[in-house]
Length: 578
Ligand code: B12
Ligand code: SF4
Image 1 (tube, rainbow, N blue to C red):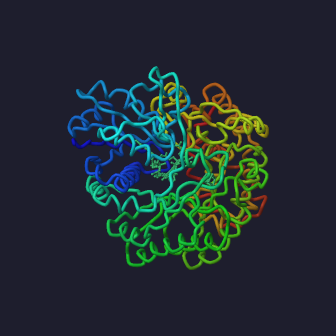
Image 2: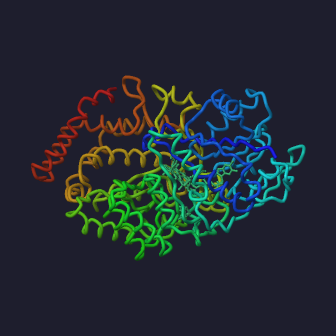
Image 3: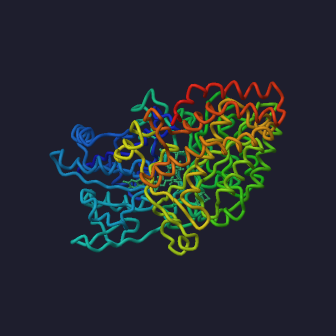
């Protein structure tokens, strides 16, 4: 039997301003797929040869060259919201560039192969895998090896009729993954580490599949099921030992609800044990259980105590119960806040903890402009720092496919240029608008029954004004921003009443309506993103700031600390000239 060489292509987006793109985001999919195959088809597993994953973006030519040089037979690619356009574009060219028949298989959360007419849109793709890929890959691999022909009964694969007019698809939640994909694929993991030597590698670490909830913005599990499965028989201690041995230190704790199982605390304790021994484990992100209980508290404590992240966070999405209800989100802000304040109390002195982040989403059903301002006030005044995300519509999330839900909340969405979180390519608004290839254009909620497009522009502006004024890099949120909140809030209100603020709003709203870009150009014809218009606003209204501080009797040393930073915005004042 001739072995099959498999290339795995899963580039991370290299434009996010939140993530340093020199880092390499590992996608563990090959280990999940191969470990399952090894377990179920041990006889044939040696004939499936996975090459080290391609984790950085490639052009069609580069990928074709790689295919030729490595004698690749099948290209497997993972598509996510951050790479789907780029990957499909690259894949569209390669069959024409290599002088041999190859197969292309794609999967991942943004593989929408059973809707949106992907059958005709992407004729160069041979197989679309939607949902968990283990069983589907097993069937595809056996077919390619010539062991057994692929049946159209195989779940999680989109099957097309010969004329491609009919589509058949059945979802299955795959159970029985009670082993460690990393341990099972030790050789592949080591080969990958060698390949990317010198890079900072980030490893997703998942101990549980799926999520029992259905928050309306989320498509966990491909949005198709709220079943969950914990890896049970696996020896987590051995797994953490493996991570430590191989210096796989930077982890994304990828469970939806880490802490839901008691064993999670033990898993974390093992990581902390290694940290104590000098292994520099850290978390790039984590998804913790939504209900606050003993495990939740203990996990948050350990994360802070062992310095597992410089960004300890609470995932709130919004602080208002009616908004959480409108998005079917379990848990409550009050409970999260209690834990956050407990952590400050315990670790403020001993570890200098003064920044806990709170994840929020802008543009949720139920939100209003006023409720959003109240949310920001609540977070900052309690010594926390918001991390606000736009409401990106994921195609397999209820907010996209549940028409009753959409009509209940009057959801309107559209393609919007994401200029809040992602870097932009283009000098000014028009250039960004005309460059759809490398700018991040994605479907977002733009209005609901409770807020208009105008409100959304204002909400995002307010978020950026608060963010720029209360720089998370400069000052403690707890013990400084909260203490001085009574002096800051009136100043923010005053800044929002200026003619400069009205001018920014007018410009941004016009651009949003015309180009779907929530940003404006400076007087020098340069696009102002990441709150640059807000720094200019501060620079231009320095007198007002002084006046507001004087009116609220702030103490001199606190005022000086703020002014020292805001002073640096003065040179940007001319950006808003008009
Ligand atoms: C680690 C992670 C991150 C990391 C790394 C991201 C990166 N750029 O590499 C960080 C924290 C940075 C991150 C950020 C974001 N993330 Co994220 N993240 C994850 C997480 C927790 C784990 C991913 C993972 O490795 N899973 C394990 C693998 C094995 O599972 P899998 O990817 O689903 O693969 C299975 C199947 O899909 C299939 N499969 C996948 N590929 C292929 C390919 C082939 C050929 C086959 C046959 C099968 C197959 O088989 C696999 C095994 O069953 C997932 C949630 C989750 N648990 O999956 C969210 C998730 C991927 N993230 C998501 C989102 C929305 C984001 C953000 C946009 C959030 C935001 N608003 O900022 C940002 C984008 C950041 C960016 N600009 O890159 C969504 C993606 C939805 C989508 N349609 O793409 C997910 C699914 C979570 C969710 N539902 O909200 N994320
Ligand atoms: S946001 Fe978290 S809790 Fe809600 S459905 Fe998604 S994974 Fe589950």
